[in-house]
Length: 215
Image 1 (spheres, rainbow, N blue to C red):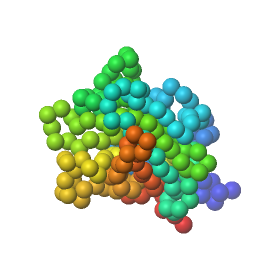
Image 2: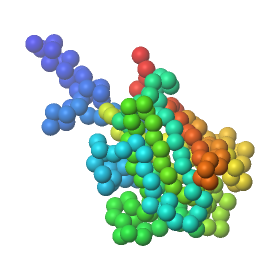
Image 3: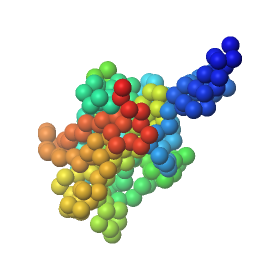
Image 4: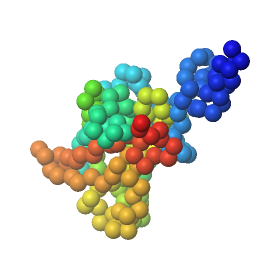
């Protein structure tokens, strides 16, 4: 009995994956390092377990370059589609600002009204419709979309931003600085039925600090 107790205590204090909180639920593994604003993923107007795999952001009905981005989220092995992964995104408007238009609360006051949530389907697919964002005003900042990931059993974490291959501000130096978190975020766009279309596959855990290794 004493031996079993010691083993339990070692598991509780030394192994995050088997520790429990007072409610009896297993604690999530914490990965990815610091992530300011990542908790915005929980501000979805639709419960996370009921999110569809596709979303249309509020700006899509406005004037600007319409765009659709799609892809597959894969598990850490790089080949198995990952269902039930929540993706939260937000970006600037056509003037390069994060605009609070609808009395947003929480992180919406900083991220603005142009944001969306989706959850991968059984094939690991996701898709969203929006306008191509603008650079920050009077800067050479690349156009980008911020993404945050939440997968079952692991805390929310950020991956590389969606950026665009044709952006004149996306220099060779900046491309080399890409951390490849979740895989590369550079998107090549092409016109399909009058809409800019691009693809990005996401690889869970890729270059994410503290991510559990495959056995």
